[in-house]
Every structure is written in C-alpha cells, then in structure tokens.
Image (cartoon, rainbow, N blue to C red; front, side, top):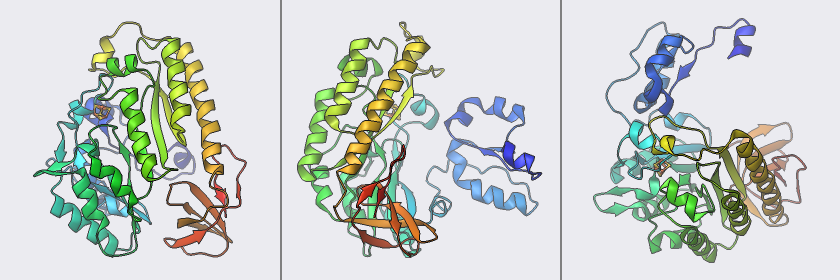
Length: 361
Ligand code: SF4
C-alpha cells in the first residue's frame, strides 16, 4: 500500500474478514481503507472494485450472502476455492469466530456440485474445499464424507484438496476416501497444543490420544500422509511441561508444516478473562522453539520424497521452469518448458537449500 503510494498511484484498499465485523466503525472512521466490507458480504468485492474503476459507487453488497461464489472462482488460475460451510458451533475459548460468523450452516449439496461442475468446466484442475468447520458439514443428513464422495465422482481430470479442518467428528468412511486417486493425501489438522490440560482449557473437542488416532488412521491408508497444523503458543496457563509436550507431539506426528502463532487476547472470548496470562518474553521463546522444530521436520519430510514420482500441477511459469505443487501438497520447481495449469509427472532429485525448500525436478 505504502509502496504503491510512493509510486504515485492511488491504491484501492478493501478490508474484510472477522476484524471488520468486530471493529467496523473504527475501521471506517480511520479512513485508511477505501471500502470496509463485512465478512458475510465479501463475495461482492470484485463487483465493488469493478464498479469503483468504472466510476460508480456501490454499496458493499446486501444481505447475508455467505455462499456467493462468483468471485471465489476467479482468485487463482489453477485452484478454485469451493466454500461448503460457514460458521461454527464449537466455541473454543480463544476464538471469536462463532460470535462474528454465527452458528454452523451447510451449503446445499446440489448447489455445491453445480458450482464444482462450473469450476471444472472453466478449466480449474484443483478444487479446494473451504469453510470454517468443514468436518461438521451436514445438509439434510448428508455428512462431510457424502459431500467428498460426490465431489470425487465428477467427470474429468482434476483433484480435490481439503483445506484446514478440525480434528473431530470423522466417520469411518472418511479415512477410506483417501484411497481415491483424486483426493490429495494432505490435511491441515489444527492441533493447537500437545497438552490435554491446555486443550481442555481451550475447550477443544479432542484429546491428544484422539488426535493421534486420527493421524494413525490416515497413515494406515496413506503411509506418508502429509499432516500440517496450527500450534498456539502461550495460551493462558500453559506451563513449561505443556510446551514440552507440544514439542514431543509435533515430532511424533511428523508435521510437514506448522503454522505457529503466539496467543493474544481476543476481546469477547472466554480466554480473555482467564488468569495466568503467559509473559510475552516466554511466548517468544516458546514460539521460536516450535518454529525451529517445525523447520527441521519440514525439511526431513520433504526430503523423503526425493526420487519418488509425483504428479505436479503447474502454477507459475518462468523462463525454463515451472512452479507448482505435487499431490502431497509439497511445492515443486520443475526445469523445462511447461504451460500453467497442467498435470506433469516428475521425479524430484533434490531439495532446495532455502528456508522454505521446494523439491527440484
Ligand atoms: S473450531 Fe475453529 S472456528 Fe470453531 S470455535 Fe474453535 S477455533 Fe473457532
């Protein structure tokens, strides 16, 4: 934004997300954003920008349009986000989402299938299933497994990836679906902490043992199943022992990527009122330890794919190379001449030496 201003252009800044639902008046009053769009109206953003540059001023949408998808399909060239659900009924003590996004609602299955068919027809080769708590999908008795199954049976050469998911409520049939060649063996399964004591205070819906069992079931179907996760460091009352438990569980789960963040107070949550807030200095030290271990695990996991053929979906193309992701959702850089949005069979021969290393093939 500042860079654009320095270049003399007048940038357009649109703010949306939960923060808008929480602080709309402040954000509007600050005058920093050109438009402040409530979260449930964000599907109107393209329309809004289009109208802005045509010299019209539009109200930022109307009504609760949580499943407006005309815009979502335009955001990436190869991957299309397919939103199937919104809201959450879980009420984790640190989270404001149920308050601002409301209770869980599921999008009708026939509508999702129609939307998926349109996206495949438009040439997208990867459908990414998104929502707030997608594992709790439930439309007229059709659960998440039914939805996945229906999405995997559509005609065409494409793959389906599940985005972030909560580790609770999976039926037996869910695990078996990963035998399907169109379903990528990757889940971002949010652990948050490796200590049952902390999980209980967070009001998470699982124990470490249950999380472990989920991971084992996934890896009994696909041995190298790619598990990534979120770890929250410094939740109120987190002791050094709890933190060490988290590091132990991270290693045991062999996460290939950990999104770590330090707990910070969210106004209006139950954790806001909890005693034993962890000092910032301790949070920084712990998050550094989590980050260092996460880097080690990532490198080892990715290196284990050297010499093993993968099916890469090309995304960005440079001079003599292409970047993309393999089916396990590991980033690749391929040498040669390719087009974007193509499946390419490749065998990586080494790993880059960078902090976020890609496989080289
Ligand atoms: S399950 Fe996720 S969205 Fe729901 S309350 Fe917990 S953290 Fe928030």
